[in-house]
Length: 124
Image (cartoon, rainbow, N blue to C red; front, side, top):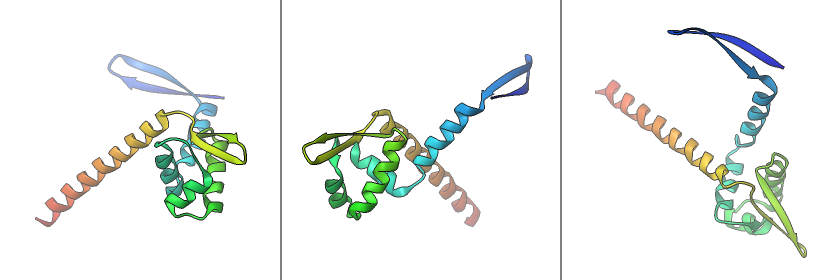
């Protein structure tokens, strides 16, 4: 399903077409990143592949919690896994995921700085 929107600009009216299914998929992927523990797991996986047990040990989260979050990340295609004997190793499915997290982090820092500057002006 598509939605069409007319946009007025200097050159006249433009027709923009948005694929709602595509935007719904984007929204679902964004929801995957809307959990602090999952973001921490993603950050740790930037160092390379590791097991659930090792992630739980390093992050000091219960193994069941790590497993649950990895299952969500795997279901959304954010992480991939491979089996080696009785061990399962997880890694990021695409290094751009880490880059996207860096970008969001920088945007957050920029917002914090702008708010700090505003607060200083307001109390001065």
